[in-house]
Length: 149
Ligand SMILES: [Zn+2]
Image (tube, rainbow, N blue to C red; front, side, top):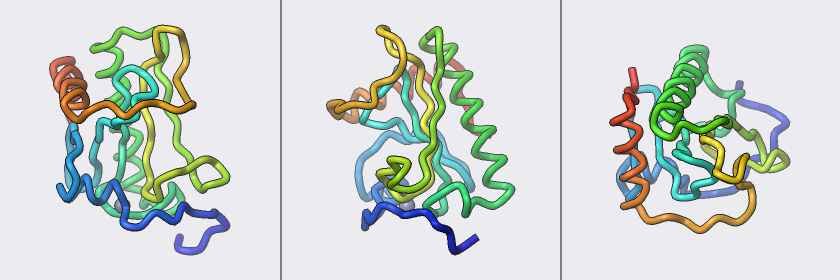
């Protein structure tokens, strides 16, 4: 699908493409030829990661069938790893298409995060954590058995 009714964020260049290319430092938990998992510096929950396609496109509506399947398989693998690593009573998954739905970066991404000690996830202002800290989160998820197939 190339033409939708969705209003997209005007963010050029794409931050996620910069992270995936290595132009900007960021923690990549895993990647294959279709999917990558990034550890976001905006931690809105415990072990908060982003599941993204390696190909740039803005919303779920542009994803191929193979990409849709790989995305949900990877979201599920992340949820399993977060459960094992953080032992939270809840795991949130969210994905926004279009600025009207609060999409901030115009490259499709699913959020996966364990709930916070106070409950839920934080949708307010969060302080960016350093890459050293997101690297440590990635290590914890890998030690809990995360792998990208
Ligand atoms: Zn991109």
